[in-house]
Amino acid sequence: MPKRVDHEERRTQIAEALIQVAGRRGLHAVGMRDVAAEAGVSLRLVQYYFETKEKLLFYGLKHLTDRFTTRVSARLAAAGPDPGPRATVEALLLASLPTDDESRTFHLLYSSYAILSVTDKALAAQPFIDNPDAAENALTGLLQQAQETALADPAVDARTEAISLLATTATMGTSILVGQRTSESAIAVIHHHLNRIFTNNHTTPPT
Amino acid sequence: MPKRVDHEERRTQIAEALIQVAGRRGLHAVGMRDVAAEAGVSLRLVQYYFETKEKLLFYGLKHLTDRFTTRVSARLAAAGPDPGPRATVEALLLASLPTDDESRTFHLLYSSYAILSVTDKALAAQPFIDNPDAAENALTGLLQQAQETALADPAVDARTEAISLLATTATMGTSILVGQRTSESAIAVIHHHLNRIFTNNHTTPPT
DNA sequence: TTCTTCGTGATACGAACGTACCACGTTCTT
DNA sequence: AAGAACGTGGTACGTTCGTATCACGAAGAA
Image (cartoon, rainbow over all chains, first blue to last red; front, side):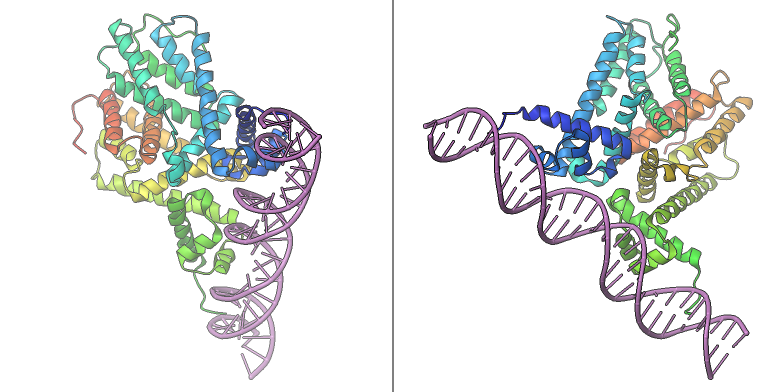
């Protein structure tokens, strides 16, 4: 047989191509031939590593979320060792905003998958989000931690605020995506709420 | 010629069919033949009244937003004559949540169009939203009005809160749509913020 | 070495889609 | 009464898509 090749590596390469072309032309518009061309391989190869388009799309979603998780982790690490709860929360939220090409693509495709999952049962059954509540729980924990150390207003309901912060950030992201709002104004809104929740011992460093 | 027919009426009928089938199978999956079948007319007729699929989709978007505007107005009217600012705001926000089939379809399709517009310039150029800022402005006005009449906390920034309320509501809607959250919990989150913004002279009637 | 298995290419197939074309009856105009 | 314009149906065309098929060379196993 020809050079034994790492299947997982190839799949990653192709999934990357899928994300690129889908980010450019929209998830609905991407065909296997487009993915093949973008990855620089033949149509047959895409078929070979992912037998069906559905499987390719599933894998693409998984790859997309993996990449995003990595990215957020990097952002958190960049915030320095043991940053305060507020800095952590801020890094978490701002990392989700589509401020550059990569996050823009992520936001667009993740939203596309989400919308698709409403009418596509197979997609909805996918481990679509292990982070729907994961992010919510993490944020809630951070807020509670801040409350215990008297860094945040003890009167607010941590979980509700966590939900709201995530929700606000998500819609801000979409608004940026469709060109309805600038990232600056989106960040301002988020800061506004962080200022409300966190006691002002530490002010927000400029972004 | 045959019975002179009201073109606008026919177009409405067909657009309605588009919305129905798109709400069921997803906007990406709807073809002209599906629309024709759903409307109970021949494929040729859909072609006749909308020459191209693109025009049909544009008209569908317009029809969708029109129907939604009508619906919200009705909800507002149902809130009684001259309700307080809080009741008005609440009616506005809750009317946007996908709590029944019609609003569910609206939310799904509007989101689909929005996502589509990111990669489709023709759609982005459409009078997509005359209500992007319209809703924001209206809500801001209501909050300011409430502040002036001492019904709302004068310390909050009306516009920022308006933006956040709309953003939170939007994401709550999507969460409901994908089955990640119940409408009850979404409503609870919204009430939480209304309670925070509005002074508690008037409590929220149960929903 | 021989034979099997793996990776790869090229191409073909059937379905579905948007659109175009042709035909026919009806009704308005003159 | 005659002819033009309108509404409608049926159907065909060209393209594109996902998938299947055929073929072949290279590398591991025996």
